[in-house]
Length: 278
Image 1 (tube, rainbow, N blue to C red):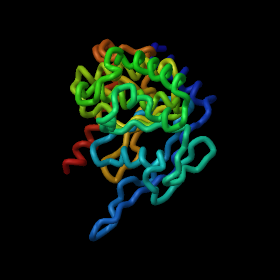
Image 2: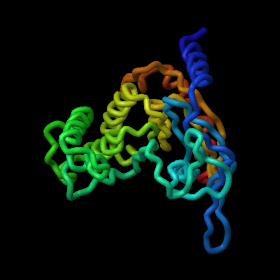
Image 3: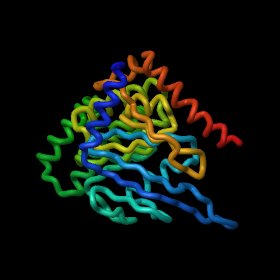
Image 4: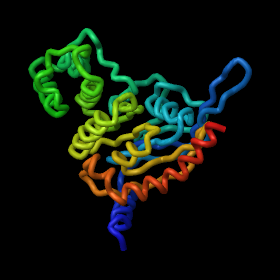
């Protein structure tokens, strides 16, 4: 039996015994426009287990971000159910277990790096000495030492995104929802962010649901890839990603195993890109 198959079996065994953190059942979303209802998401069901890193992958417009926003409670669903642990997700309700990282860095331009990262702790009323210690650790983790007093305008795009990531992670969410957070970055910076995120996830093992349209990114980061069809978004396939951890994003992309799985999934994803153009 190949090493990849061994890893795949071990992963399946761990999933079977792990606690389910996110449950999506028969999820639908319809938007009204001037003339008709637009079906964005159609009858999507999946689960995310404790400690899994799951990527939602698909072409633009397939409903990936819409699903994520419904899981976060930021958008009402049209049908189906969403649960986090045993609790039904309610539109507009705040779930302290969940952290959200947006597509854009969303840092406050008038606050320094340390003030941005510590914002959530400040709002939560955490004592200043404790807050300062946590912020210092977060800055060191993100490789931002020396930029504590810098403002966002003085940072690169990748550095601003690290600030946004650490502002979420410092609140210690059990579940992390990420909506194409590295999509606007150049390839080199994106790989650096992959390395940072993987190092943090290897240590903390949050449950992650990560939206991307980049197959290489999904393979680099995730344990599973949920592939959605072109609009209306339906669950097309669910792929295990059997690569060993910890992962080196650069070395992994140069491996034969990466190339084989990339080609396999690309055949299915490419069909959906063609459907989108059609």
